Image (tube, rainbow, N blue to C red):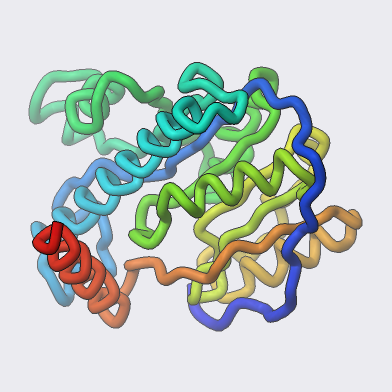
Amino acid sequence: MEGNAPHGDDKAGLSEPETQTSTTLLIFTKYPTPGFAKTRLIPLLGPDGAAQVSRAMTERICRAARRFRQQAQEQGNGLSPRDIHVRVCYVVRETDLTSNGSAKHEIMKQWLGQDLEYVEQRGESLGERLRQAFADVEERSDQIIVVGSDIPGVSVEILTEACSAISHMADVVLGPAADGGYYLLGLRRSSFDLDLFTDISWSTEKVLEQTVSRIEKHSKILHRLETLVDIDRPEDYPVWIELQKSESESAARR
């Protein structure tokens, strides 16, 4: 996806938070098989290098999700780790099953840990896969947030801001990506029936614009997060390198 995110201040105003019982955080990712994961980075890094970047970024967002879940308990804001469900929505190739003889969800558990939920993505298009992932957890959730795994800038603070915005006043939260798509989408229960996944030009610079238009059409309150860069193309790769360098320097100063 390419292009610039639309401008405008869509930050929702804050009011007293509503009583909330359950949040589901969905993480969309692929198993990092060389030649299958981050294919647009292969010309720069080769199949193995691209897969290693994919692996590292998925592990990074899972660490952020765990810290987000834990901080909800530590900060005493009415949520406990039981109230925040972290579900990894994955794609695993059949050849990966043949290589180690495990079921798909077992491969994911061995990689990312036993404390997360796992479900295979279902649907032909990204819109269909997102719709199905949301539908699977609607009944148990007061709010649902989905994030991609290729935005290393997604932090505990961003996840907390998204959750807080929905708990207070926002119907929808969007995290714009610099290429014209979005890296995060959050909905409160009263907006679960919004159709934000059909008639969208997926994998183009129009995704965010079309989604915002749909939200405005239904007069929903939108909270927009900061714009981040997804690591998808060779020209995006320096962002990943710079982030790793900055974190290494920060760790060395501790």
